[in-house]
Structure formats: C-alpha cells, structure tokens
Length: 413
Image (cartoon, rainbow, N blue to C red; front, top):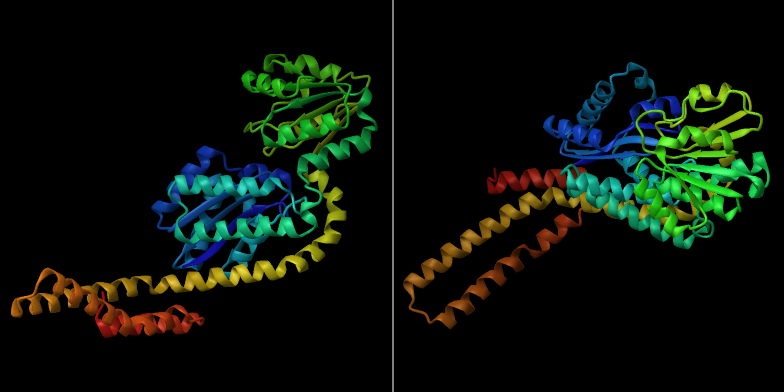
C-alpha cells in the first residue's frame, strides 16, 4: 500500500479557483462514498481556505491517483480546474502530509489552525470509513511530530493564523482601532480568532452577526463588551461601520453590491477570510470600499518565508526519522497476511499432533496442559528468528520476494 495526494492549494491556485473546489461536509460524504465504490481502499479529504486535497492509500497507487484526479475534475464539473490540480505519490505524498500538519505549507508558516483542521478531517474520514490502517497511522504520526516541533522551535513562541495576519493588515491600513466600529460576520473558529484580535487592539465598538443568533448570544456571554446584530438586520448596519470581517461557512456570497451604500462618505475596509468568499468581488469597485481576501495576505507572509528554510532545517531530522519509522511499519504490514497464515498452519499442526498424542496416551488434565505449552513454545522458538528477520527487512523489493516465496512454499492462497 502506498500513499498519494491529489488536489488544489494556495501554492498554485488563486482564490477564484479554490472556492470552486471547496468540500462541504455533504460533498465529503458524497466524494468518499463514490471513491470507495470505485475501489479506492482509503480516502481522507482535507478542505480549508488554502487547500482542497484528497489523500488516498492504495495497493495500486498510480492507477488510484489517476482515477482520483479524473474524479476530482468531474465531481466539480469544471474543466478549468484541471491545470491547477497537483499529484504527489509515495514518499513525496508522505512528506506533504508532514509539511501540512507542521504548518510549513500554509500561507502563514507554522499557523496553529491547520492542526485542528487536520484532526477534524481525520475524524471525519474515520467516521465515513474512508481512512483506515495506513492513513490513520500516517496522519497520527504527523500530528504527533507537529506538536513536538511547535514545542521545540520558534513556532511555539508566536502562534499565528490567517485571522491574525488579516486583522494586522487592517490595522496597518487604517491606523488605530480606538475610533473604529467593527462588525464580525460569522463566528466559527476563524471568526472568533479575528474577534479576539480586534478586541486586543481596542476597537471603539464591536458588533457580531451570525445566521444562528444563539451562537451570537453565546459569544456575548464570553465577551460582554460586544453587541449582537440579528442576521436580518445585516445590511442596515453596514453603513455605520468602519471595518467588516467576514468568516462564514456559507457556500455563496452574503455581502453583495446592494448590501453596501454606494455613496459612502467614510472608508469601509472589508476583510473576507472565507472560502468560498462571503463578499462579491465587485464590492471592491464601490467608492470608499477597500476589499481584502485571504490571497491579499500572501504578501504579508514574505517575512515568514525567510524563516521557512531555518525552521525546516531545524525540524528536518524529526520529520525524516518519523517518516522512516512510518515506512518501516508500512512495509512490515505486507507480511501480516503471511504471518497470519503461518500462525494458522502452526495452530492446525499443533492441534493435530496433540490430538494424536492424547488418543495414544492416557494423560491427566495437568499433563495435557504442560505438553500443550511445550509444543507451542517449541513452534514459536522455531519461527521466532525468521519472523524477526522478516519484520526487520528494510528493502521493499526483498520483502516482496520473501512474501512471494513463503506463499509458494507453504501453498498459501
């Protein structure tokens, strides 16, 4: 079994493309079901504002990767996405998993949010019976290494997120928040992070709005200095605010051209953190409106790129060691079916031999127990070194040869 990843991410595709291929929960269910029915052994889908990637494990990985790529294009019914799709297989795909989990492949290097998103994706894949032995092991090991790296490197000193960079950019563009009225639309993880940073900068007035008003009221209990706006009154308040931060999970735009007063006298700065986007791109052409999306923040991360090589170099040893151990484990499970067959054959031989002995010799229950243990110990001793050598074989081709030979010698099916 090998691993592959097929998908689209921020490294090669602009937000206009990424929002076309966002996997909602219902789409994850449909895609996992369809690919499983097509014969893909294991599937995990990771979809965030930066990436929509399908990870698979298969005994015929090249064929599986090709099938998934074709599925990806047909699933979203848009040929334009084809030129943005990347495919990585085997070692390259495994390394990609680690770099994603560690935050080295994010817009914000070392961002904290991606680890939670990976955990959620793994949990969903397990619930859908998509992820199994290989992907479960790979992602859990990558998550463990990521935590160690964050603890042992500079990444733990200053936790970053797209929300943090977005709010930071707004502050640089507008100056002090002390005289600003801010509306936070959407109260998921990203929205709450943005709200937290806005409060830290001391905005004059903060409004929150969520389609589910109970969520807004719950947040108000946590931050009693904010004011709740009902979703139905969203358009009414936009004329009175200075900053609008959008981070909903809506599949379509919420803020349209007619949502904004075209005769605004004061500037309105909008930060759209959502993918798909919450704000119609044409809003940017309204007078006195300044619109930023997550791709606008890429220039903000140039400073992070300077430390990317340093962090990667510092962490490479831990990542390479974990990948080496994963590959040893992955190769060793090839022999599991053979070992199961050998153990079954040994058990059958033992039972036949003991049955013959018990028929010929009248033994007490205690004597039978002793002989049973002696025979079993002898058979285990005979096989012990051979099994250890099998499990310790590092060369994949050599291990494959051993599996074939053992199947032929013992006539295992």
